[in-house]
Structures are given as structure tokens and as C-alpha cells.
Length: 81
Image (cartoon, rainbow, N blue to C red; front, side):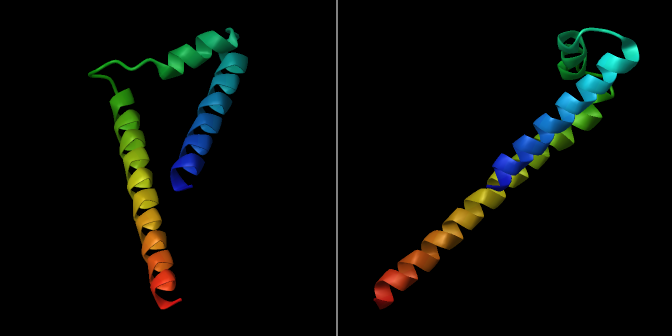
């Protein structure tokens, strides 16, 4: 669930930023979306992209730990019953 919310928020922010760029720079929505999404090594965009990828990995790890913890709780309840 944490990963789903992360992806949802990340997508919403990208779409909002593209919409604002479309209004400010008076270019088509797809063009502003592609301008934001392009990734070039050696640019300052890596400063944003690397933490975003790390955040996705951390959210996936958190989901895995929560899933594992819930499985342990369910196994404990089944053993008692």
C-alpha cells in the first residue's frame, strides 16, 4: 500500500508540474511532460531522480516488511486457534 501511494503521489506531482509548465511556457502538454521526464546523465536532474528512485525502493521495502509482519500475526493466530 505504501508503494501504491508513493507512485500515486509521484504521478500526480509530475502531471501537475507538466500542466504548470504547459501554462507558463505555452507548449503542448505532451511536450512539457517529455521535457520533465527526459533523463540525461551529468545534469542536475540526477539530484532529483536518484532520491525518487531510492524513495520507491524504500517504499517497496516497507511494504515487504509490513506484509511479512502481517503474515507472522496471522500464523500466530492460527496456531493458537
